[in-house]
Length: 363
Image 1 (tube, rainbow, N blue to C red):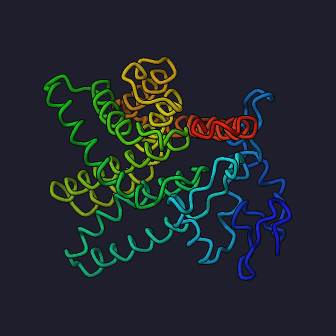
Image 2 (cartoon, helix red, strand yellow):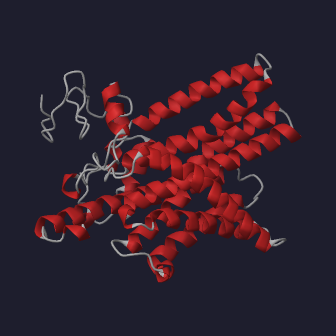
């Protein structure tokens, strides 16, 4: 059958459209759902002037596919995007909000793996499970968040193998660059200098990966920035978890992984994603130049990331974790608004392609 929304041919064993996510059997939202806290958050994200609301459907609908059943064919189709043979042309890219769902499955798999390792350590007292416990616990939430960014990358021009490469190489490289900055600072370590050193290190790494014109979309910057941030956050969490185990107990190990995992989406992942998106926004279709880094559009986002990082690390008594939760919400409001800008950018480039068909190199 064909999807009534986009005319995409739907295989018999698939319940939802593989292209736009349409499902005729899905019920409408209830009044309770519309009045929920998430819908209030969604309304705030959508608060932009009406003349700029060219991207539909509303933000509140992007999680509508999470709790639906999905076939293996749908997952397989997602994992093959981004290659030379599967990257869509700009005129084929939809400028509406994507409807991600795979990230929730990834989190479920990681949670099951972590619980199995936890049983091996706590119930059977087997120390061979500890390395796996630390690694899975450190990567579960950052990688889940990264898969969400990957599904939201509407151009679908970055393959999953490339993302994994950026997670590991970018995460390690950004941590090494941060250590260089900390060595320069020596004894001048405080929340402000920590924010500057770590965000600058991630910015340098992100710019290294997104400077190529192949990754010129704002959504590409968000994704590759999130990949660097996820690697940084996961390796840092693994280090703190190991320190907690050495200096404390299993309880310290578990609480370290728990709290850092809960707060991971609003920290390094979101800040690096915003920096990457800001750089792609000012670079556009141009080749990289150093003077791009002093453009106000980039500096505003980058300085904001530094300030949020500094506030996050400020040791105010009695504020943990409420201050971090507020900063997390603020970070994700900015992330979703940047996604809206990215979708609007695609809409504009599709328009340029339609009315300038003889200049494909600029699209």
